Length: 326
Image (cartoon, rainbow, N blue to C red; front, side, top):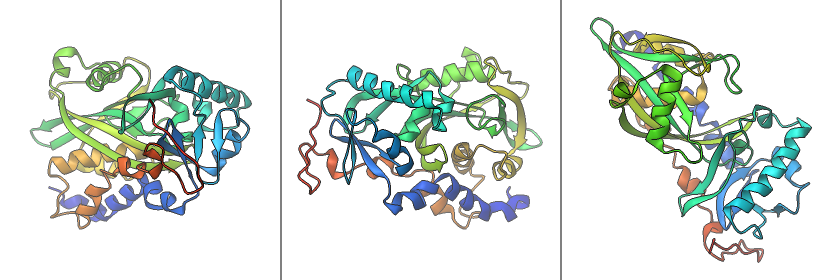
């Protein structure tokens, strides 16, 4: 099943460590400050971002241990507007890499400890604050009569703001404010691969993957809702939104080899590996680091941000207090 790819198996753990580079190293260096909103930790801020936020003391309260969004901003709308004003100001200066990929699409800023979004911000800026990202990914596959398990990959458009021209999952997209998980999945499948409604009914929810990546753009604590979609042998995906260059159907072995190259989008590798594990293609019998690999596909992001600051009226030892939303 996996024999000719045997020499690549040890590389899978290297790949998992790559898309979890911040979780495994940067997180433990202790140079990032917790980002607090309404008494909850929602992110982490690197020193290279902090130097810009210092210029906006009326919006961000910066101490030796944390960065807090001004608690005087009492509701969703006010927080959103105040942060957006700062981001637009910084965007005009054209110095911050992440903001050069401005998307005009907002993601919600949330915490497991509070049922509603605390604010929203442009998706390009989320990585500046280390805020958790949520997205959807679909693995489109076929059970080929002679080649066995085969998987459709897409090549991203060369004009995409992020990872241009890289190979990617069959379908993926961010979870924008106002859209549900399945709703987003069906929408992205139609836009990216022309998956019609009757075929979309065959989407199978298959859990989540979570990981914590870091790049020059920022910090990426990502959770992807993953779906499987078995496709007819004669199905030919066609892009409808201009964001895909091409599609290619590869065997499972070819997919592994592709994922191990620099031509593959690093943060999409968890979805592919998770699928191959669930299908039994990667197993304890052929992957010596199987348990570690599985763990690195499900990084406990909720516990990483479970700081003492999240308790109502907690103190950080300096007499500073935080309070939950009323």
